[in-house]
Amino acid sequence: MASNTLKDLNTLPLTEKMSECKASLAKPCVGKINGKSEDRPLPTSVALSVGESEKPEAEKATVEVEYIESENLDNVDDADAVLKSVLAGLDSKDWVSVCDALNNVRRLSIFHKEAMLHMIEKVIPLVVKSLKNPRSAVCKTACMTSADIFTAYNDHITDLLDSLLTQLLLKSSQDKRFVCEAAEKALTSMTKYVSPTLLLPKLQPCLKNRNPRIRAKASSCFSRSVPRLGVEGIKEYGIDKLVQAAASQLSDQLPESREAARIVLLELQTVYEKAHPLIKPETSSSSSPEEEQISEAEPITWENFCQSKLSALSAQAVLRVTNVLAMTAREGLVTTGSSSTS
Image (tube, rainbow, N blue to C red; front, side, top):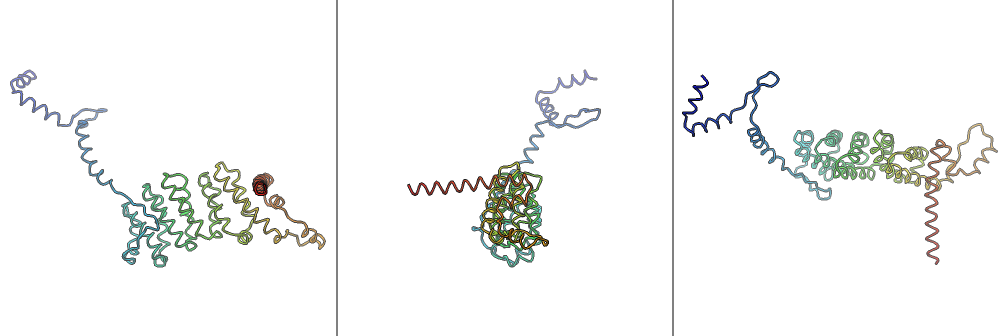
């Protein structure tokens, strides 16, 4: 039978042979893999189908997101309509729609902040959701939205700050560069517009985070917030609490944390020495009047204060830093004075 088939093929014209060969190549190959029959299309047909399926996707991927600075944002045409649709847009599965909704939140924060105040509790969790989005464009727009929210609502969002703060610290420390920069700006806006007395209790737990980069970013925020308290604010907040928090960062593994701690400690030393006449040593109720007079006459130096509030090692590290910085400052003043006299 096989010989008859070969004879039939030999008797066919050349053009029919070629057409049959092409037809057989176009059909999928049938073979056995691990004892199971499986249709395996040729690689050329797969490449063609992939090329055809990818072409529309490539056309869809040409979506550009414009990052508009706050001062360049325009007002919305219909604030009421945007207020009604903004939550659905923030929760959309289409990332472009989410970016549009985030920009609308920014516009509402700038031009209609009173109108959006009643729904800010629903807006912020959705902004946090956008900060977790795997698309960098959504993350950056969410960071820019956070900055505008801090500027507009400052202390009104303190109760909603925890999750937003955590994500911004995370994004500022371990994401793409342009996302990190946007998150940094948002954190700067936060330390500028949110009251330090309300913000510092939120920041202090972050100083103990497992992630050293998050600790470093939190330390930077901490160092920017403490000077905003002022002398009286630092005394009311508790200079001992602030010294202890800053001292814990002096031994951190990242230089950014250590430098932020040095800045805070030098500020606290200056404030302590300015306020020292107003600070009286603690006296027990059982102490005699003579002891009280002696204790009131004896000044409490910065060194004594640190040794009374910190462990021996921490106090030694704090005094080493503040003494070196103080000596450097004094040397600078001496050098400036000698050069001016000469």
